[in-house]
Length: 133
Length: 292
Ligand code: SF4
Ligand code: SF4
Image 1: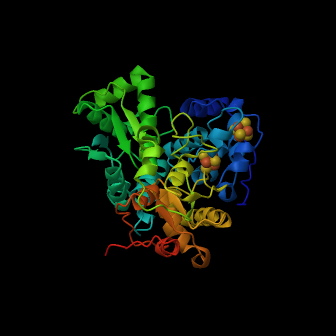
Image 2: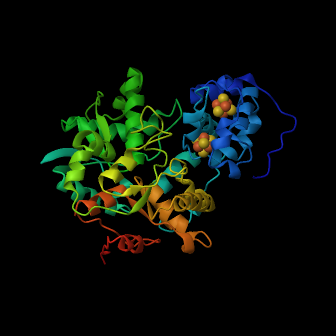
Image 3: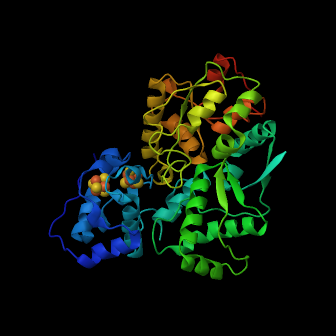
């Protein structure tokens, strides 16, 4: 398990939760924190927050979630989407958090630094679409 | 000969050529021909999950508009990522008139897309149109004794509304393998992501995932794995092969089209791979040559 993200002095904003809701088309308040999404996420071991914890911060309107590493470890694999008992498409929430961070100028991947080995184009296009502004 | 319009996509047109060569040969043996689109562009590979990201549907819309303009109703894909991205975009755009109008206005150099193109994956064509009975009858070299672990990955079956089969308990690959005379070995990792494009930003994550998938297949006794996506194949072959200590227990991986071609007596187009599938094939009496 990666190091836990520490959250101190949270600033909570309903607007932030609304913004994520608007971008993802998913109501974060449907989630009842059962943890099934995190339990089955194949990338949970490299995340600083579990997918349900990302959702929890969104529910609380805590913008600190924009600093989390978890959304960048999410590959939009949709395992959580088909398993959520509340019908929340968590991958869309992850995407909304990524987009909000990207639109604030965060850019976790420098395409120039992606190793120039013979990577399939799908990987390069995928990464540039998900992780660059 | 039946014919179907075909969209290769970037992966298949380059790194995954063998997937296509094998598919052409196999379909030929089944009386079908793939007619490549005259002009095509990248589908965008990953479907945009945001509500306001209309721009990212322009690629798929351009492809769909050309399919429609050429008078076709169906579009065949081999790559499951292209399949999913095109099919999801088609749904997203036609769900709300306003989205389609805005994308059409942007694409003023193409005829308008009005909706209705059906994106079809080759596995669906074989299952629903050709049928496994016809496949069984066409088999020339049964894959008897070959134990194969189907690797579905994500985009072939998820989300549920778009996938070709049940996302949690798919069987389309198992059924195909049975028709070819092989022995399917279902794996608990068969529907869990290989790391996808994280292979570019976090190769060690893809190595771990590929290793876990291969180990689960090996525990079931599989000789090899089959995939339907060039990115899965890259991770299962290259990334699995790079992991420390991988070579002793490595499980090779092939495209389902290659096994189909092999069984139907067509060219399986086996390339040089990091994890060579030839020894396990030869051990089951299915020797194949690699083209220089
Ligand atoms: S599976 Fe659904 S309801 Fe359960 S914690 Fe995850 S998002 Fe919330
Ligand atoms: S979509 Fe993202 S959060 Fe959900 S299971 Fe896959 S990687 Fe994990």
